[in-house]
Length: 420
Image 1 (cartoon, rainbow, N blue to C red):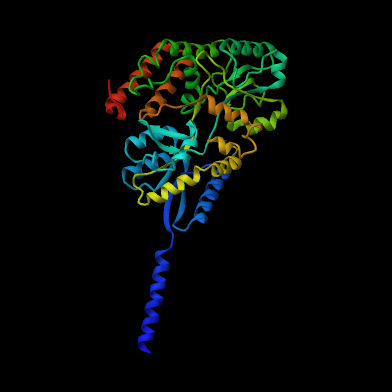
Image 2 (image 1 turned 90 degrees about the vertical axis):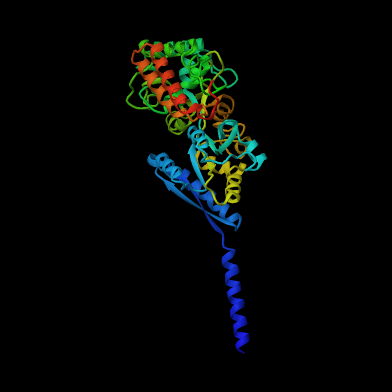
């Protein structure tokens, strides 16, 4: 009887042990805190993954956006990064250069990765390191009634306004006398808005922030003749009275202070509420070298510190699926990053109310330079452009920006790109 008791006890312990061994393994991911709709959609995505399999349990931890980059950077240097984290796309190359991120080519499902569009992939030195589920698109906003009043052609994604047409529109809006200013480019906004929103216009002029064939030379690109002409044009928007150099807020269009607003698709909700069917969502102008807008939002990446790479790959495949991208888009109204996902959403499918944004993003989007030098590129361009708007000589302002950028690249031995 004693032997039987011992055998039963051993069997019970074995069952308990086997059950414990089969328990899902916890895998931590980090993300920045943002709006309630996106946070809920993100947690719902995690919950669906956890329910779909029993090997891993994803535990999502959120960190305030204001301190997120500093927290992630400190954790990276201390070797304490989680398995997966989200990063703003321009930061991806720096983390990849520092070997904090795992390349996703061959790590994720190749077919899924191929379906993600350019704005949804963060690369560095020819390798993909991040995937994003959504993007936003820069656009022009006005009213259909104003376009009719001034006799302006309604531009399309395939035939946007030329520079001459665009300037004629500004002049006609100004001539109506209905608005203190014809146009708003959010000239009082500093920081990332400037390279994100203004450098694409400069690219359309034929210049850029850096030579993207080598990522080590800014001289001859950011201070090229085309860049100088662009800066002079930006200054003329102030001197000729088309824009307010220091607007009180970014609501000039709905408040009736401007007739034409240049901003992102994130504003469409409040514009739609104000203008309804009269709202006109237009593509950006072609200033001579094709229309261009900023691309790239928050992306997901797998870290080299991850002890469960199979879990990381499985979760990235999950979030990159068309259905999960569509779920995020429906919950947040943000632009999906694949054709298959767009087809699953009411707003971005063919014929959808905001389909134009998806087409702008797909055809015009230009990622910010994918180099670890981006932080100094961003700050240098921001300062140069605001100095120009305040009257500084464009040649001098852009030359200073070039010197700052190239000095940083030289100090860091090219940030992983071959020096000339």
